[in-house]
Length: 353
Image (cartoon, rainbow, N blue to C red; front, side, top):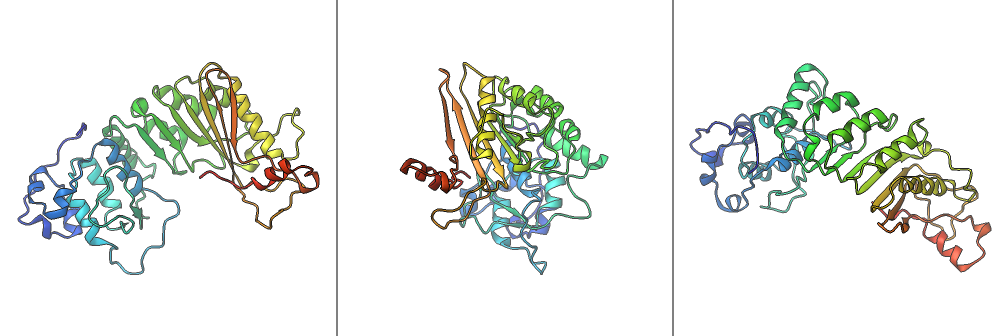
């Protein structure tokens, strides 16, 4: 296991398999407990490396789309969670301080197959966070704790941050020294009303020398929108860029476009602009536009409803060949004059996740 954290002290418990969650949450499980694990738990023993530690941390600190907390204090799926916990080697004291305090007791593993603890991704769902002491608070106490955790998660390849509670500059300080090994960075759900700025993006890219894939919130109305696209395109290590935005932030289409589907035209213009700044190397771009209304004059030909989220994708290979996929241009019914146009209208649905 590749980790820089210090192993937790050995725990002296006569029968660890008989412990309940409250007892387990107050200690670390040392390697001396592993031989005492029984049956299927022993067979499914998980060695948590740094990336998996991060996945646990991420799942336990999600604050979006939380299911309602059960009316009683009975912890759901306690047996499965206890078995999974015993199957892990908890070696990070910092992880114990943060995750055990905030997450243990509020995790539902009902989606996991029986006797199969997670080994790569943690499919847990947070049932509740301690409201009186939120993890991502920016007080000095939590700042230092959060920064310590990230500093101990060395050699991270995948990093997703989905909170809108952190100020950009605070986030940069927390991640200082962490992004050097990250290959995939997703800033999902962040700053929908205030997408990432040019300053923030530049600082993140300076720290992410090996970044290959980046997903972030974009504002096409920003005065620096084209500069942001240029910076992204000219970051040579990037192979994949995903921009997420509300339709109101999509921007104004180029006057060269005079089609019947303004959103499609604007998305195509933005993607082609990115590719024009990055010639000679392959690059894939995806735009995910939320709250996209039907184009003027549009009406359903087959009785289906309009899907308000549209996805556009494009690729440019080393030879400069441009290819665009995803949601098709919408042609209002009164303009449909050929079977080909009719087919285009039928392809209006969002086909990507």
